Image 1 (cartoon, helix red, strand yellow):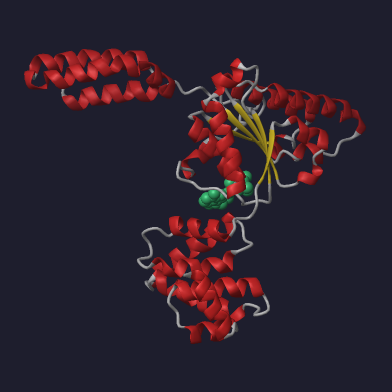
Image 2 (tube, rainbow, N blue to C red; image 1 turned 60 degrees about the vertical axis):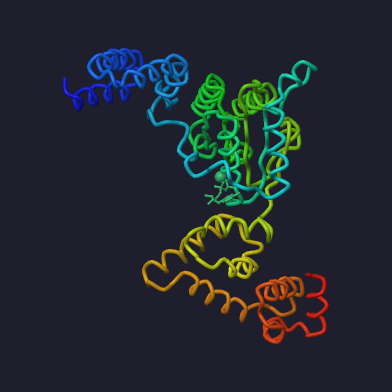
Length: 366
Ligand SMILES: Nc1ncnc2c1ncn2[C@@H]1O[C@H](COP(=O)(O)OP(=O)(O)O)[C@@H](O)[C@H]1O
Ligand SMILES: [Mg+2]
């Protein structure tokens, strides 16, 4: 076999997930290489040594467990794709970060807790409007805990008839447990929202009871997260079942600035405009800001106008349209203009804040 053919055969075995045969084939060929190319002897030895310790993790990675499917439609019940968007550097608003760190810390030191008869956090309720990062935070936790991540969209499963819904939910819960996964029950309020005719009330109650029990008994090696945009739809009895509730706020001014600098990293040479335009995104969700930034970037590419230029233009237009009575925003704007070395005269004309007040602000800044 020439080296292309060896590579093809090995690839086929790997992609088929036949890890045992792939390892065996690799080992045989490594021996051949060592025999025919003595100068590669050391490298071959190194690789062979690695193969033993890496065996367990490799087979885990290649053994793709099939995802649970709906009995009738055979469609997959859960999603896994989200993890690609998130990376370990993702930052969260402080209140959120604090809870997420707590989860990680408790896991890291869980032996200590368990020895004291305590359990690490195994269930979380994420609350907040769409686009504030609930799904991403769940994916981030999975990434940091090095666990598989699965999402079950409850609004989708709740739409079929209840007997089937119940089966599907149970299948997914069992699957997630068997994988020690992080499972996100998205649109959790869909359960509360479901309207039913009387004949199904009993079944719905049973389903809710099962779910609540699962929340309480979720095993230590996994994590169950429920997310909702409609906290008011959830019974307080449901809230209580979760170890922690995390309320996701809209990003604040400093969250927005860090998000901008990451999202625009490399696309703008001069970052000084970012604190200025960030002011105009206060009150928006991450999702909205993300969309805006992408559309700026697209426009810059399509029109060949430098991105800085477009951002400056956006800033100038936004300044014109803001309400000068919004004192807090004006002070923030003035402060950042001064920090960006815009003259006091110009800052006054933009913000309407008097020169003496600006002087005082400037003194506070230094
Ligand atoms: N902490 C964050 N840092 C950077 N981007 C974020 C963050 N949170 C959310 N986003 C952005 O907002 C989008 C929506 O987030 P998502 O997790 O789907 O919100 P939710 O589940 O609350 O509706 C993401 O695709 C991402 O672009
Ligand atoms: Mg979501």
